[in-house]
Length: 233
Image (cartoon, rainbow, N blue to C red; front, side):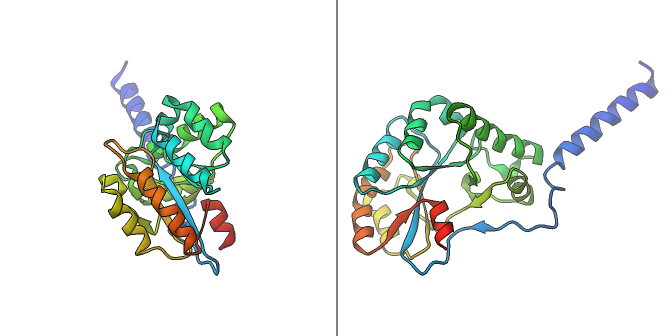
């Protein structure tokens, strides 16, 4: 290959890489997408959300507690965990809970290119569609890390971005009482509450949920899915 041809090939490769990186950045750059952390509502609705699952045992325990009080929640699932535990994911859907996209591998998206972010969102979506014919419409970036790339890719894939207004910090493996107190002392109508059904170490989330749900209902709160909360608000 001549030097001129080699230079041309290298230039073409460079241009393709630049186009891939800017794929999401230039999509709807003039539009500012709405990011939901809570919803204004005249009622007492709140949304319980669970991130990072499905988990082989914890997700099942959480669903059993939710069923006991006839509550539907939103589970933001990681694609690779869906692949590893498809039966659990299928059960979440079968029980009428809502499933959101939480990327395929739970990478911190702010560190990725637009092309890589788009791939993370798309792969999780593909898994849910291919295994369960389920197309999610809500997206939550891992760790709530948002950038221009993340926002534009979210819009490009036709998702609504959901963060949270109340973090239980159960991911710190806090004790049960600390999780319960963090919710009961701060919760207000329209809140989107962050919990996790997959934590690397021992999780106290099911035990905390067992205490929280009846207390919230006793106070007049109505736990609903995020989509239901958005509709009410």
